[in-house]
Structures are given as structure tokens and as C-alpha cells.
Length: 200
Ligand SMILES: [Zn+2]
Picture 1 (tube, rainbow, N blue to C red):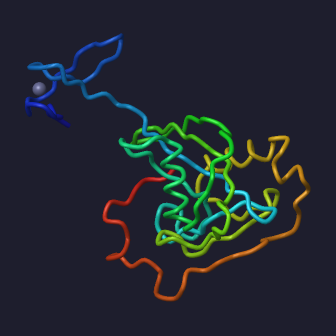
Picture 2 (cartoon, rainbow, N blue to C red):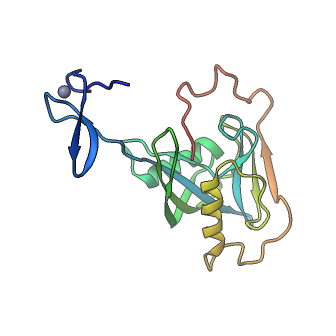
Picture 3 (cartoon, rainbow, N blue to C red):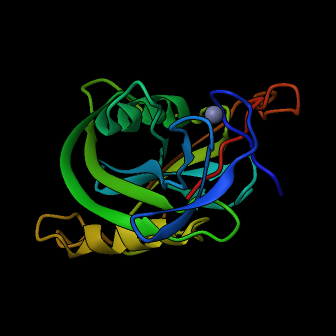
């Protein structure tokens, strides 16, 4: 499929740059780089467990995930992480630790660089479902429900391995708490974000 220059509209041609075949403009310096996207995931500790949301949208409709999402061009990854917590679990959080940085390979879409943080709730903040969630729950790190994204399995495994994680503190049992979306809050097509964002 032909691609065109974002600066001047000329059809791109293949050029070799730093040993890679890339599509580039024959008229100016535009190069169609295939860069990874940057996404975040947040392990929010509360009441002896971690907060998960059950997804009201695809991908992963009905499955559980960590709050998180793509980093916008005009924000740092830590700001994106806190913003996504506000949007997805309606909670103000304070990031307390970088858990890790991950490569998330994709087929037919840009790969991702995933950045995972640990966080705690800001005093007085309680999680509740945002428009993309059916419900939010607090789960012991060792007894998690079915997750939507393999990368979140990896994040939670690394979180559990941290010497200070709640898993090490011996949190046991099943779901600790849950808040459901109020009736009528379930997003319809009209209410769903107009630009659905892929998730890791
Ligand atoms: Zn051009």
C-alpha cells in the first residue's frame, strides 16, 4: 500500500537508513518511522490487595485489567499513569515505585513499551468504575481473576516478586471488595470514547 509524506503529500519511496529499509519522502526529510507506542499500567495497593477493573469495552470485554493506558505526546508517563487511574478507577493515586519497563510485541500494530508503576490511593480517595469499566474490585495479589492482557500478568508477577509486595505480606482469600458501575452507567456506543484506544 502506498504511503504519502505528512509534510508535502509526495508518495514515499524506500530508502536504506542505518541499515533498515524505510519509507521516506524523495522531496524532503520526512521518514515514516515505525516507532513503538508507550503505555502504562498501575498496581494500586489498597486494603491489602490490588485494584483491578472489569472492562466494559473491547478488547478484553468482561475481563479484568490494571488501570493504565497510552501516554499522550504532551505528558510524562507518570502523568499518564495517574490520569488513567482517575479515568478508569476514578481514584487519585500517588505513584510510589517503578515496577518495570516492558517490551510488548504486537502483530499488525505498533509494538509497545509498557511502563508499570506501583501506587497508593491519595488520602480519602476510593476506587469506583470509570466509563470503560463495569466494576472495580480489590483482589489479593495471589488470587486474581481472569486478566485481559498478558502484559498485565507479567507486571503483576514482577510486583508479587518484590520483597515489599502485599503478596509477601501474606494477603489471602478471595475478592476483598468491589464497587459496581451504577445502573445506566454502562457505556453505550454513543457514550464510548469516539477514539477507542488499543490496550496492551
Ligand atoms: Zn515530503
